[in-house]
Amino acid sequence: MIVVMRPGATEQEITGVKTLIREMGLKDQVIVGTDLTVVAAIGDERLKDCAVVESAPGVDKVMRVLAPYKLAAIETKQQQRTVIKLSETCVFGGVQVPVIAGPCSVEGEEHILQCARLVKAAGGHALRGGAFKPRTNPYSFQGHGEDGLKMLAAAREETGLPIVTEVVTPSDVELVSEYADCLQIGTRNCQNFKLLEACGNQPKPVLYKRGMSMTIDEYLQAAEYILAEGNPNVILCERGIRTFEDHTRNTLSLSAVPELQHRSHLPIVIDPSHGTGHARLVPAMAKAAVAAGADGLAIEMHPDPAHAMTDGAQSITPAVMEEMMLSLGRIAEAVDRECVKVSEMV
Image (tube, rainbow, N blue to C red; front, side, top):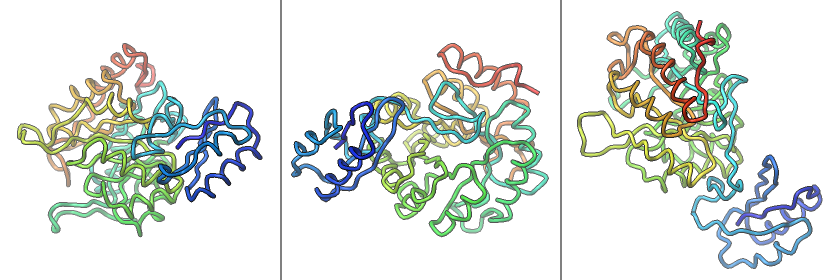
């Protein structure tokens, strides 16, 4: 249930609505938009009498949200998009189409500094890199842990690029949030609900990747775990799903972009690196994602992919990224967005 307050509703009126919602045995959450304030009633309200809320002072109307995900539903924000800022030059959900780029793993201090410089030089907006790496094989490189986070922080200090890095366990959320500007939840943890809740209990934005076998409906219900804990800053990320097709690592579902924008107010980012698994396919799918209306891109870039510790096959080179960014800028302009301007290239 969504309670839409009248323009100019007072704090006392909003508090009164929150009290009524709690008396009904539901959880309340206030969402302040650019024009309107709404109060979401979270829980099963099917047997509740909504008329008492609708007649409360300051209330314009009460709407039932039929989707099982209440806070993620587009009706919750009255068709307004959520805008999430990682920095002054990296904003998701608006006109800009930011590009998060960098290596799959933080391999060393000088390496991540080099990658950060290359990302910035190509016109990227944020630096990605895993300090903690969940791996299918238990004997594979698992990341440098907190030392890796410190290396990322040093790269941010030099370049100014905000950091996006993965958190793997609930116990690491506090640590990672001390260093990162945005916490990433990977596909292997897509339904680790305790991790989702822990990320919802801290204020940093969360880049939440779709599970490789998740439906759109399941994906948004899982994202609701983060929102329901009080963190509204969720960026959805489509990174490909598991199908029978074997010419790519995963099947990148670009139709998820307009579908998610139809269902939810949350920004949606595309990861063409994991979505294809082949560096040669990344630029074309990145361009297609921008044309489809994606709110951002997450791309793996490595200065020497052949010797990358992880995912070298899907990592583009700095030269390819520079060329790709110029193309993305032209495509973004054609769909009334902006990605990178030639004047920003250094």
